[in-house]
Image 1 (cartoon, rainbow, N blue to C red):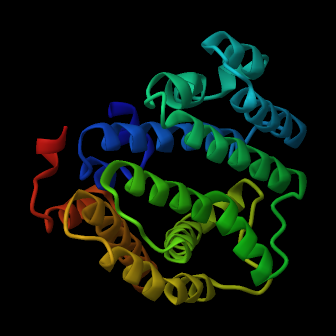
Image 2 (image 1 turned 120 degrees about the vertical axis):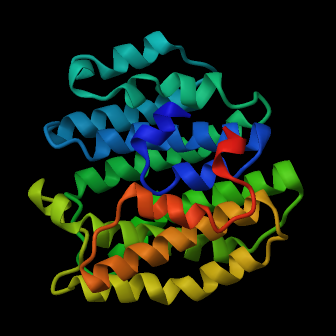
Length: 267
């Protein structure tokens, strides 16, 4: 949980709304995603190295088994440049998830790693809104679909898969808009040509009604709190972009206080 807190602006507090094994599984799944994301986003790794590492991670996930030593071998000679969350990929993907759930996560993570490699190979060139749809699906909507499967597995909650796709798109678009300047400093632009922050904000807002309907379809409880708080953070991010105001962890923590159970009780 300390690793989760140190690596996530958006998802630490929502994940802490969950309970027990579901919370731990979602946390491990998030950190495995983050381990791959650190490869995809690394400012100093050349594209060919990113592609090798991401494709290699996908292959490991599709094997009968793999070990921490296999991860170390894959990361060599870039081990020193990558953060601890990536070094601990085996822990997040294999050691922590329950054995009967882990294969569902491996399938999602392998597909994500291959899609990330495809985007690295393409130079992250977003030519139009259709490309943006493909990118947000690859890295966010697919995660939403996996989480929807976990809601069913752990709580018997069946949700709209289309709603999960919209949920992922809205949240990812808000993060893209928020991180735009930082992305530009490393030569990456997820905005289609000619788009402004206002255009990306409208793209996110267009998916919010379906994302809210998805959330409201879930009975009151920890899973609904997870989804509702994530959307609250998304809304607050978009508002901060429109108004040009800062957004820090204290602001996000204040959003969590709207929910019934204090975050500390879930630690």
